[in-house]
Length: 519
Picture (cartoon, helix red, strand yellow):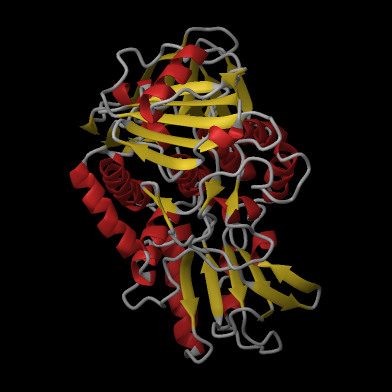
């Protein structure tokens, strides 16, 4: 084998996956068709589970520093160029979910997608991933022992053998097509232009979401004369050529068509065009080939969910694939990637399609929006929609017959008091390994204590003891590398039962002690 894993595509999802694999020492090669990173700015923010995940990998300070730099050094991410806040289909008033109570973790980090790509490229290189740019994969073929990847040459070898291949190569994924995976869904019905330009008289600019009988605009003006973000949604139909470059005249004319008047625009910097096609791969795994990000799911980028769920795909798959290469993965571990992530994407497609419908022009939709405005004002409705858009409602089936309420959910921001001082859970997860928090009395010599029960898995599970000051109602908590709770116990549970139940869970997710390398 030339490498353990080939990742097709060096967008944020492929790069995040490379980082996760390299944290576990997995030899990883990333192959990217484009010679230089794209200046893509469709995704403008990281939110939901992504922000605490970055914190748990020690990456959040880099992203917050980039955010401050974009805002002229200010700590307020909205100080220079305000972006639309909590909304559903442009209906404001949606209360943002707060999936992480840690004051060091903001609910949103406002950085454009090209900045995310740059930061993850730097991190992947730092961890030792091999990245070939300017090389296109031309064919893939798998057999019982591995995957053969052929390229058009360039920087990458023309032929590579890998144990596994992950397609993070976008909506038109060659990996997906050659793996024979259907990409079912609906075609585009509208056209969107998104660009950064300098605007003229800001007093004449409708800021935020603005819906008219012709379509919608979403404008985030820069109050100090810098580049403003302009998004124009035209419901007349999809553009015949999605690859055609967006020109300043086209953006100006399309905006005037929607608003009924022209806005002064100049100095077009970055621009994209896209539609609202919504598709979902029917399988995320075909033996040794996997799909993640846009190669697995596409939808209209309203609510900023696409990049965020793609990054969560990467974090979900990375440790499982590493466990397989290392030889300790249980037999069905890789199958849980599809069973856990497919339903999340399916729900996102439903919600984004609903938002596109609510954005459509017409008096009947006007009436529906009035009803939705009333509903969003209700705390329960707002919480439900926010939970879905931020992934705060995601709960995985961990296989327990009587799971603790915390089991399957994203671990809260736990803080431990230890003899070495106060420790945040996030700081304990920088290495990307499973973490067992033994919150029982450290002076108790009982061999059935959680930490002692987990000792045979010391080569792959980190055990930390201490007193949990933020969540005192737990005896122990086992957290997977992706941040989700695999198991939790109550301080009053019988020690022998706790030890057996914990070991059953460790076997379920992290295999038998002393696993041998898998081929």
